[in-house]
Length: 308
Image 1 (tube, rainbow, N blue to C red):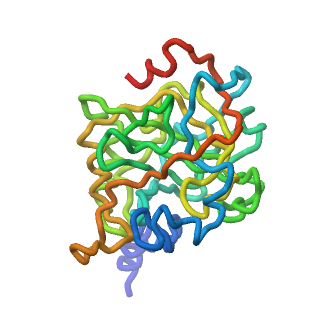
Image 2 (image 1 turned 30 degrees about the vertical axis):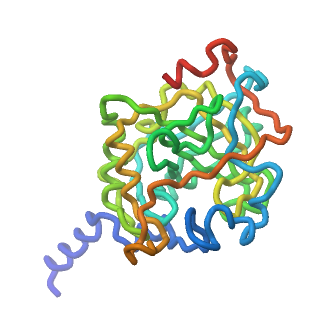
């Protein structure tokens, strides 16, 4: 091999885009024994495989704004969310899930989490068969067509899996999406990424660079907080939920893209992987848990200014 060939080979390595193997390091292979609609392992049977799913402090919940406490001192600090990231996305059979390079992950801290530091792990979404339902949480029994969950693990515990063993292991920031007549072009990169992973186990790069601010509302200061669980198995009750009050706009057409994903379940009618046209869990009772708002909710208008 001559000198020019060596130089050419080196340049290919330096300029190559991340490969499937690189993506797999960021988003490891996902296997599970549960589904949303399957027989014996569907949502009504989760507790048989994962007993914690019948716990007393489960998620999601409805937030009745007439009953929330008010604490203006609660703050969230989002650090690194304005940066550009090389992002990866996969269809894991339950949702579409986004991850970023491990060395550049954003973090969350602030008084709302007792100033502990939490590292971003992944972003995933929940939606419904139509736009009347879809979000897992609701405000005054009003649902949104789509809900995004940004999952974080406590930095002290070193990894998401290790954090599952601790009562303060995880923080999940919930983002609602409400329908608008116009497409939200800030979501274009995300939507294009989702269109590249229609099948179960598909993985792909998000085109270009991903900016978290594209999927976040402008007002991150108004939010609700409560203690709950993972909304999927193993349903561990180790989650501090931070639910952002202001939703992000999304069009009906953009929401429909999510419903075209395939689930990790074979359809008895077609013999192929079924469409994942809904992936939300039914709500659990509050069971005397405290819900706190960082802002003063108007008891007359409740959350209408956000829902409209």
